[in-house]
Image (cartoon, rainbow, N blue to C red; front, side, top):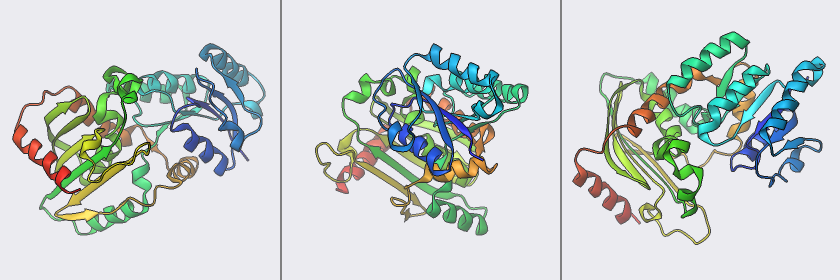
Length: 320
């Protein structure tokens, strides 16, 4: 039996992956909302989606469905809206009796997680989030391998993530720290979650370099020392970017060995939807540690060893 979905943020960059996943899992998209109306992607997968540009009318439609026949109830709301709205949109889903599947980060501030867990209990519904690196085939195999050979020695990890963005980024909500949570939250949270998933809880974290387009630092986890570098500045790409092409460089080096995971990203959202609908989705507790970590980074002052960070920047540039 198919389930009924609604999508908030249907005109955004990430929404097509959710819409495709809803279709791939044999379910039905009943309604979509976005203040912008560039949502032709809907017709690629569904032919009869009620679309709203005004949140109030969308809310009224969902409430009407809640009070109508059981077959018309909305079972899940997929949330692809700007980060600072996730908390409010999750609350809407729970209030109308739906489960929520929320893009990263599930929330910006960790204290919102406690309130959402209380609402899960109150409404009898669940909140799930998108942690797609946890279902990446290469990374799941690596985690199993490390767990089977775990010793008391901590791993040394270098994490580098450069994803070039143009001037539009600063102008959009993504470039506003109150709206996106900043680079660590908006760009880095998947990789920070991966480190937590691999290596355990946070022992300490330091912010070494803070710039609107670049941050770097150090985090000690139960089983690893992690040096990390995140940037949207294309000067740090280890190759010359082609004009008009979005370019990304990911590197995870564990004890001197590079982890290759550039492939295998196709349809990870569909895999996550399948897991979630089977009862194995990633919930609030799964996301908590990485949300706490990026919150801590956001509120730290860059304080130590800038020359080391500059040396790392030079190393990245010289590897072109």
